[in-house]
Length: 100
Image (cartoon, rainbow, N blue to C red; front, side):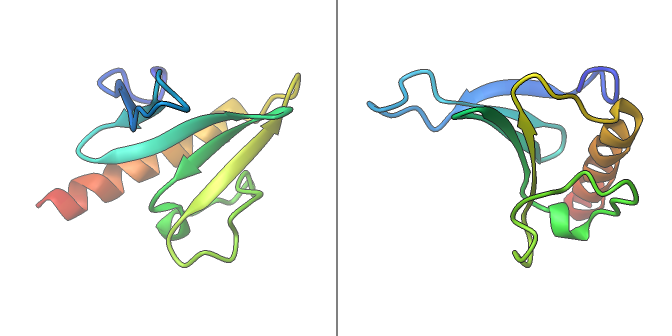
């Protein structure tokens, strides 16, 4: 995340009794992505993911949503870092357009 955008901010949001630490949320002019540790995988959810180009097809879940897209990364697996950084930069550009 920081390689794609050194100015990205990580914050813990949506704290509740069942998850007192909250959920890590990365933002820059709006939410970039939300991270969730799920059983056996890490999920990176992009709230505006449907509007992003994903030529390397990193998005592999929430594909039928009209707005959201997500990437599930199984424990021990990795993803294409360059393609991931492109998604991050695309999300930031989209946030910047909507902030105007």
